[in-house]
Length: 324
Image (cartoon, rainbow, N blue to C red; front, side):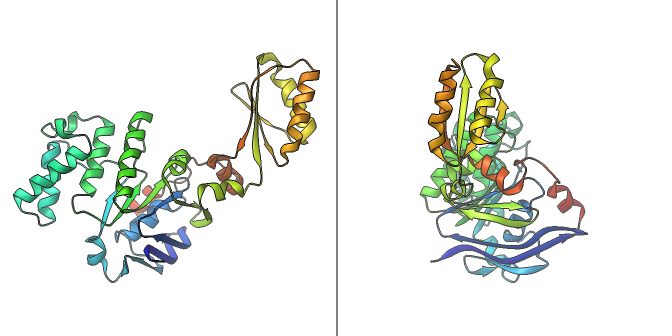
């Protein structure tokens, strides 16, 4: 199998903090790898090394066969990078932003203008192309930022938490753009804290925590690692929530979660569900919702790490204050 991205034993320190602690990655050509983990897990540090912006303390990495340390120029000619925050000039128009990048990449003025127009059209920004970027919404800026990373027609694209701060509609729109890139054969490495995002987009997923890869596989494979399904029961009468929780506890011998008038518990043997239903019926409890489903990636992450995918230490701050 041919790999667009390979990393073996990547290590990176920021003072006493080990941002990466022996990370291995392998992304086949044309696939999307989702990298999950909270801030401080090492996701951004890994992207910066692969994009030649940081040098690892040890380990090796290649992009389309070129070493990121010793053949950085060749790597940069093949990749695009979109960071966590839109890196566009707010005083320039959309067209001018993309043309500037095209000119920096060596395109003629005419070629840069044509490339800018084509990308603005592709990202549904053609009508806004003549406006100053400061007038754009957050979602429009992120789409322009992603368009900017494609001016050089990269074969490998790094997306470092590209939907951070976007509203659900803008996030969904950006997902559509990413799916279009995948259809064009672009290899994508996507870092995210949004577990639904990885579930929607990724062919394969790796989970980072404290600088290490702690799990990898497809979404379904990771969900299967918990060995459990999830039972959800919402009583018609909210005042019976505690009674439902007691029934679930008695049958499963485990305390369920109570949130949003819903009782939720991991179930390893689906055969116990009828027993719960019978007990609820005996007590005259009517359920407005009762479902048995696969574990979500959020629940997988919690099972693997002991915490949810939320901010811990911010590696952006470490990277900005520590020399590479």
